[in-house]
Length: 109
Length: 113
Image 1: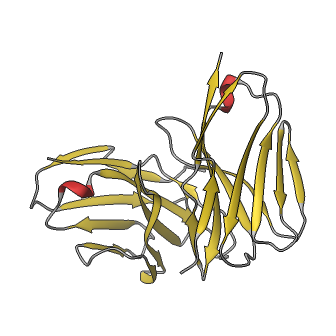
Image 2 (image 1 turned 180 degrees about the vertical axis):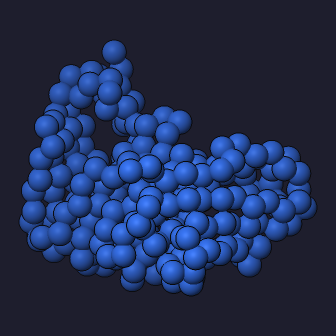
């Protein structure tokens, strides 16, 4: 079946540094979704990308969908302590949504 | 609008027992999906229900089952619990459109001893 892979698994950054997580699918995706899970919390939907090459921004977060619609990235500029958590990408496999294993972001003060 | 509600928040069971978890979706959402989250495996899809019918199923043994009621509330049952079933079980609802985002509940933390 389809797989969605994310790298890196963990990332430690100094507060104020940038952070990027990458997502790759074994097949072409009709769309990709990004979620954030704070420690002790549940995944919360951030954004959905649909178009090839699409770029969307939410304040310091920039999301990209690859031209071939098989990869995506999330970039955070100037990280803050509120960015701590695990970031998941997710894509459709048929009509169910499957998740990458996530990238856990730690912020060093 | 109230969010997705899962009960109970925490459960401790012993091996061999069975457990039932409950999920109430966002009002108007007819799709309910269940995921198992463990540190090593991330979010693993269990199954999805829509209008009281199981629409999708993941690769879990038959000990894991679920159902959905006419008011869209869903239950998940795990029989003959094993130590490896210890996990956070997350329920998520979404609108009818397959591309709609998932709205997760707070989860049920199951510990099997």
